[in-house]
Amino acid sequence: MISNPIRETIRIMPRGNEEIAGLLQEYAELLQITGGDPFRTRNYEKAAKSISGFSGDAGQLDEAGLQKIVGVGKSIAAKIVECQLSGVFTQLSELRAKVPEGVRAMTRIPALGPKHAFQLYTELGISSVDELSDAIAEGRLRDLKGFGARSEEKISRGIELVRGLDQRTPINVAAEIADRIVAVISAVDGCERCQYAGSLRRFMETIGDVDILAAAADSAPLMAALLAMPQVQSVIASGDTKTSVRISTEQAGQPGSIQVDLRVVPADCWGAALQYFTGSQAHNIAVREIAVRKKLKLSEYGLFEAESGDLITSATEEEIYARLGLDFVPAPMREDRGEVQAAARHEIPALVSLAEILGDLHSHTTLTDGVASLEEMVSAARAKGYAYFAVTDHAPNLFMQRMTIEKMLAQREQLHKLESGQAGNGATPMILLHGTELNIAPDGSVDWPEDVLAGFDLCIASVHSHFDQSRAEMTRRFRFACENPQVNIIGHPTARRIGKRAGVDVDFAELFRACAETGTALEINSQPQRLDLPSDHLRAARDAGVKFAISTDSHAVGALDLLRYGVGTAQRGWLTPDDIINAWPLERLREFLAA
Ligand code: DGT
Ligand code: CA
Ligand code: CA
Ligand code: ZN
Image 1: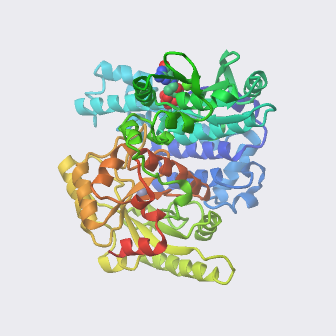
Image 2: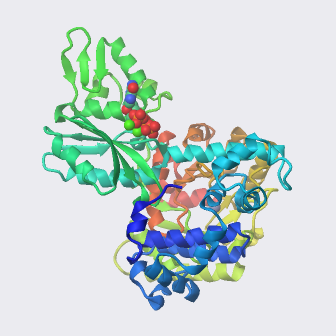
Image 3: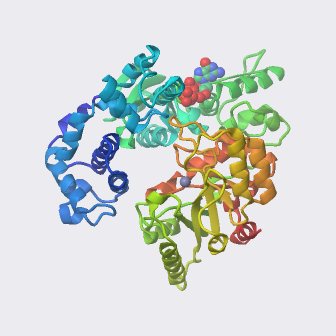
């Protein structure tokens, strides 16, 4: 774990929401590691999520005020007050003394889990990921109860996954940092343009470093503004054209830091520089080959006549692509996967955009594992101007969620009241869809009998466990779920967690066929740890006749904003509004759901 000097200096000050949430989350994890009651663990996790999404400042509230936050009862409120005074609470300190920091890091290794991590610590004294890696190399896990050669192999692969994540940053964290920097640089006198480029503009799932481009006659004040940002941890290099720094990602909710490159160019070569630094490198190479064939030369400075060296154009990306005889290529498509050829044939599709999404089809409330009430979720969705919005809480088979048919029916009634309550207030009313997220059992069956399911406007079915099935079993499982006439959408289809858990092993061609045959859509889940179905599979699915739902799977009001990552993923998969069921007007969506 990276030591955090900021945390030391504000010991006695009131704590911010993220920090309080972090302490509660840590406590939940430590409880789990030491074999605590799973319901209790979940309460702390839920309180942590709730506080991190809380609009006020939990660091300033007293016990009574804190208890008004969803998921915060008397005992958690008391612990938060203790944190406000001393930076920690007693029970957390006690558990910290029992479990070294490195053991908590070990629990993040896929295929290991909290119980086994603690066992490795108590029985072999292994207290960090590095020590675990050594122990596997020495074959020390093999003789331990509950372990074997196969689990050594799985854990090794898990360690690789975890280490990979340390180097790349989730897209939402990088985007938050980039947005903040772009705002700071744009506000500097003399800054004519500023935006981010690189993998972030292309909506890659994880980001190596953030590339910011700005246009100005004098770069010095822009570089100075970046260097003056309080989040800068260290300066890697600073010059007239490029400054590289490491910026803390703590404020974006992620321990550690990310490299940021700021390049400043004269305004007249903005387009060429933006095209170059957006990449990908493979796309740029393919575009430059087109230039060479036309006896031109493309660089970050502009498009030139190869022979004379005369500048043709450099001001905008649009002009550069046009002068090369290419359609403009949207950034998420720039991966050299056929887009340059498509641009030459003038067959670049009109990609779906964020503004074309008419509603969100996957959301949770406090009835299950959400941290916002039905009213709060609905009013936040309404503020987005959606034409429709689906509430899809979990069903009884995820037993931790404690769902019952009575609770579900009460929610439906409440939903209808909310919907009719908005009539007459002038604006076009938002249509509320009552849905559910069903759990796909290992045999492909889902919660609730068919007549209960028929009462929903929409059913999502998702895999939440038994990820290890063989390809044949998993494929059969999905097909069976698709064939259920009540199932409309398969949620987060691969069930992967980026950097934590690989996706399930399924025959994708067969899954796509099953979806197309049964009129079942595949979800593009916008959660940055999921981005599932991954963009790599989208074109094959679309070509097989599959439709998609871009959804946020929101468990809090703020999560509704994550839609941009789902849309970016869809754009990487070349999808158009016709492919996306929630870009359709309500009538067409209803027809799809009813079919
Ligand atoms: P990342 O940072 O690993 O997530 O991925 P990118 O694509 O942002 O890569 P990065 O930051 O190394 O470079 C940003 C863009 O700049 C890249 O997509 C294309 C361009 N670029 C950088 N270095 C080179 C190079 O040596 N050759 C070419 N053709 N392009 C480059
Ligand atoms: Ca980059
Ligand atoms: Ca870079
Ligand atoms: Zn789910």
